[in-house]
Length: 108
Length: 112
Image 1 (spheres, rainbow over the protein chains, first blue to last red):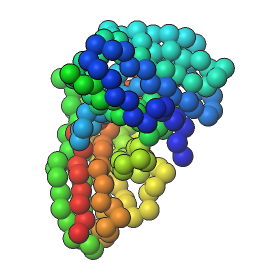
Image 2 (image 1 turned 180 degrees about the vertical axis):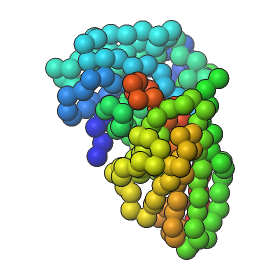
Image 3 (image 1 turned 60 degrees about the vertical axis):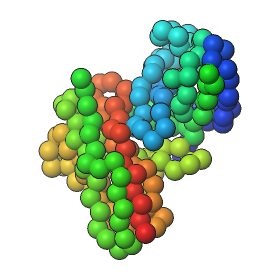
Image 4 (image 1 turned 120 degrees about the horizontal axis):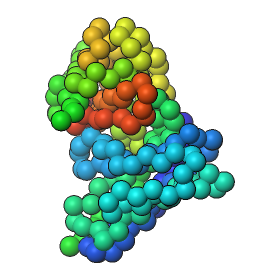
């Protein structure tokens, strides 16, 4: 059962542009996480936002959370070729449920 | 540097073989997880464990079993491998009090 659904499925941008990915979920949450996966590798945790937070920053990452719409967005500013990866949102407690992911390609 | 390691990066097995995938974490985490990842389907939870000798079924446990005899080690077993178990297998761990999961590099299993 997938809780999070990312949108778009794939995104291709030029280096230096901003990339925005969206995640929608179905049930109430305590927090929402974003992960990155480089091709053929494991996932790496990027950021966690709690249900009582609306926005959170980490370096070039900005995450927003709208619990009334059951949605979150991940913004990567000034993208680099190294940001090329798949990005997943995940919800749940100890047992996370991941969406299908957004594939981001940053062209140099 | 925290680490989750998996026994193989690539594995090729034949239909009907018994397959063992090993995962070890060095963070003293209570929780450990096995996922499989297939194109278009995202990560699906196979089994997880909250403590030594404890296991719970995830969303797709059929055809798999697990073993956790030591806190740092969580094994996934395919009793009789089938071609539809060809996939990327990812192991992860997390602490009891914090949700962030740490992932291993993955094992790409091909069953012929």
